[in-house]
Image (cartoon, rainbow, N blue to C red; front, side, top):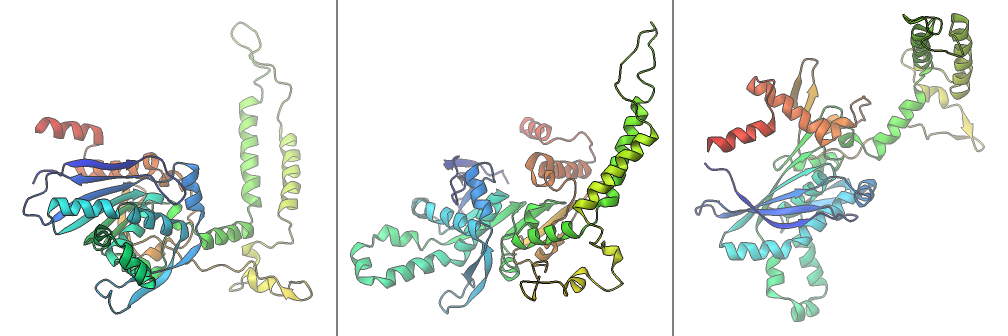
Amino acid sequence: SSRPHWELLFCDTQSRPNQPSHFLAIQKNSSKYDDALHILMVVRGTKSMSDLITDAMMEATDYEIPVPGNDNNGSSIRGKAHSGMIQSGQYLVQRHKKLLSTLLKLSNKQKIEVTLIGHSLGAGAATIAAMEWNSKAYLRRQRQQKNDDSSSTRDNTNDDDVEAYNIPISAHVVGFGCPALLSEQLSRSTRDYVTTVIADADFIPRMSGATLVNLLLDLRKLDYRKQAERDVEQALRELQTRFTGYSSSSSDNGSEKNSLPFNIDDDDIKKVMNFVHSGLEKVIPSSTPSPSAFPPGQEQNEIDEGSNTDGGRKENWEERMKPVLFPPGTCIHFYRDGSGIDGTYVPCTFFNEIDVARTMVNDHLISSGYRRIFLNLMRDFHRDDHFSFESNKMNDSTSK
């Protein structure tokens, strides 16, 4: 079969808080025997300050969707969802309801099939939009609003407007690096139509209010004094190796290569290390025991239970929080296995804590994260270390 040809319908490159940048395209070469109108929606990830405002609205807000096929009996799935993403996804649905209704009428098709693609914020907004479309939650809300004021509705209802709420739409999502978006039950309910791809240590799918608090608690309890002292001493030894005797050495013509105002010897390193040690003691007092100092089976929280403030009130701010939000749908985790890239299906709860790694930020980006992972996968698949997406595209065009 021929590849689908798409024609641009709508494009908004300027994002606003809870209104992400996106574009719509329609398939032009679908079969005349296909009863569906195919629409592509691509939602951009975080790029502007407006997008960061949406990202920051990470409060776990109540959210529910009717159970598919049971719109009339009141059955629904209740849970929590990322507040900013809820508003962004609902905006996408409301923004294009009349456009999609008009397109369906003009196409003489029976239904609309929407494929949504997004990265980061875009993946979260796309998932909420698909949930709204597939569950017809927006239809139920609009009908309820109309029934609340039936008299005014009868007077002012436009037939085209009513028809816009009755569009038969099915939506599927492919998201990359989607934020922690839904509570576990809601996430599982989207597995049939949402696929979330996560690159190795990407921190965004793991980041929620609870996991951030837990990370800070872990960092506070971490006794990093020995590692810090080791790093400083290694740096000093490297300087000593590079500079010792360098100022006294001469070039071939007898002139001095460099004139250094100091020379690093072992006594200097000991003095500096004593200063570093005393400084770290002030930052992490020795009265704070390291995790290895606890008896087997005993946690620091148990030791701290006796420390009270405000007339006997116990300090409980160190209690770890239970994560509520997770990536949506069917989760595919690609990871470095030591010799290349491997991948596996994992439950959404696999991403219940932030994985602190050197690549945790780069893995979330398109160029250094997802594109690089898929490039390595394709090179392994084709057994060609020189494979590139650009050259493959050129080969396809010349073979036609």
